Each structure stands twice: as structure tokens, then as C-alpha cells.
Length: 104
Image (cartoon, rainbow, N blue to C red; front, side, top):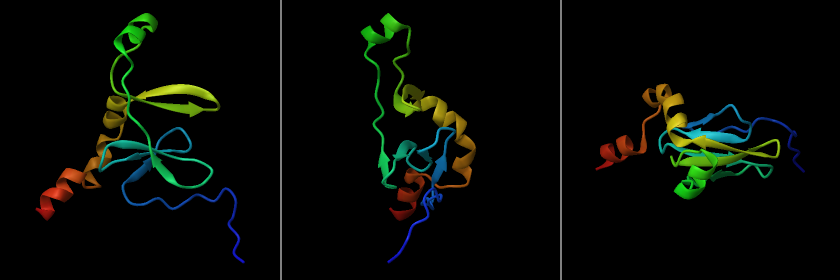
């Protein structure tokens, strides 16, 4: 019988960087946000746009964003902000387009 230490940090595959919110990871090669919950499985998150009528009513932007939950409260992370914040990591990790260019 094997035991797993509760709370042990999982080893992430190459290309994933943890963001400031626990349980969420930015995948540098594909420029997407992924979540890891209790099961320990990485799952891609959907990037959505807020409909213009709702955005105008609440004073929000219609930029593509991810909706995450932090301590039970919904937050929206703009995709452009995440791309800008982790732009320095792109030099270290090849992007999907660069890898596909090498293969073909």
C-alpha cells in the first residue's frame, strides 16, 4: 500500500508556471490558463468574453478573460494581463508555434 503526503506540491510538466492564485497555472507554450483542484489533475480553463450589453451595464471590458474562484469569490483575469505578466518566461520555454515550425 502506498501513501501520498497530503499537501505535497505536485510536480508540474514543463511549461507550466504557477500564478499568484493557488490552484491555477499558466501554460507558457499555448498561452492558456489551467486549473488543478483536489483531484490533482490539470484541466484547461475556458477563455470567455463578457457580452457587450452586460459589460456596459457594469463598467467591465469585453476583452477575453478567465473566471476563477478565490476563497469562494469570483474573479476575472484578463488574458492580455496574463500574457504580459509572463512574457519573460517565453524566452525560456518554446511556444507551440515554434515547436510545430521545427517539426514541419
